[in-house]
Length: 278
Image 1 (tube, rainbow, N blue to C red):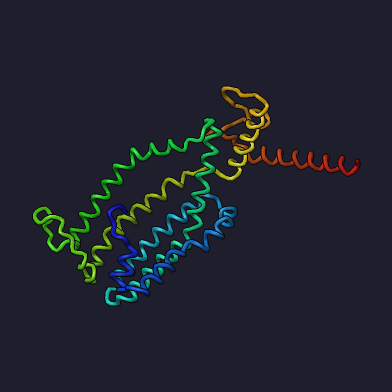
Image 2 (image 1 turned 120 degrees about the vertical axis):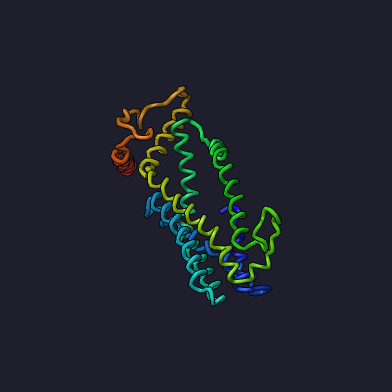
């Protein structure tokens, strides 16, 4: 969460007590946690719907927080093991979550196609409007978490209103104090990720719908190149009535696509047959 201390620094420096070459090597290894899954992410994007990947990624991040809290509570008396297990949880959870992040980037492009389909424009800049509402909440959380840190040991004096924000980073070397300081913001993060699962449950934009959108956009492009630029375009694919719509896309988009693909395949086969006869 905003206001949280850097968790990698807390693991490497204050828990594992690393420095010099050891710190650099482990930090370099940590950077590559998402490299391999990024290359194999397309396989998962094709095999699983975006909704499942999104929820899986959020739950992976939530699980990471649960494992961190478990390490801090279960390995209180074994500093090295606590740091190693926290690092392993961080590495593995980010590793398996990477395909979800790649799918999210891919879906942002698909959403731009959908915006173009519905409005004729890619409303990329309009997404910043949501920041007007989320910005104050983010700032508020960024103010609350440091207060919780101060109240749970990050300040050497508990009366922060009287003594001010007199932060003592050396206190993070004390195991008992560090665990209390860490668990509070991690709990806030965990609650946030569990709440983030709710919106994707209502996601209903699938591959067939996107493929239909692309075909309609290509049809509009062809018309535009021919000089036909209607003020509005409400027709379905190949100028057929789109029928029942949901979020602007025909409910039977899959059936329409299958029919169009069959017609295209038949036309291609006929063209090939004519060419071979000649």
